[in-house]
Length: 218
View 1 (cartoon, rainbow, N blue to C red):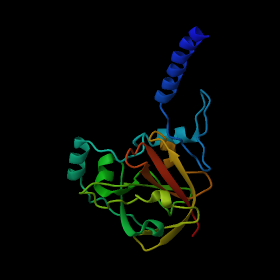
View 2: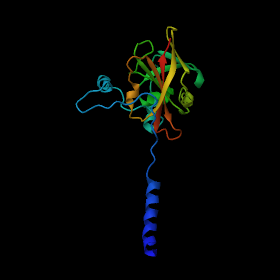
View 3: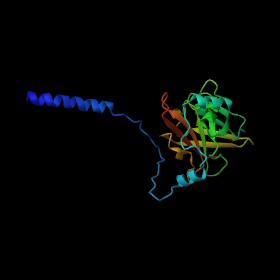
């Protein structure tokens, strides 16, 4: 009996240690939109869009910054014409000018950015995709743009105004946490005209992306 215990105790200790060192991955939650699988040889709707929009980055922009990115952001031309102004009462944003861009340097400079390959509210069936920093940097134009994005709830309203003064109202219906590689969230969703707000979670690791979606109601 004593000999058996001498054998079992080290085995149990090894098992406990193994369980402790197994990495715990963050749960990826999806409220109502799921990634569709594609069989070999088939081309999905997202894949075909990706082929047509090959100039787009393949990962979602984030909160990380390198010295090269900072230099590019500080030197970048910020004269991109403003196409939309954003109001989100839940986030305390009112008539915030949103410029267009596609790079990390663009986002770091602006703090809030419409991905220039995404849609615009007046385009039926589009997905206006707006990325915003949770924190930003001391020289970022709009700091903390989407810091409280996790507080958005179904039914919350998002307002967009264009340069002609036209107003577009979206109502939040969905939110999801995805990986930076899940670039499909920037694509349109058939039958809907959308706006998507994206930021990084959780603070301070920023390893995932939170996306809040609203549908055009007026």
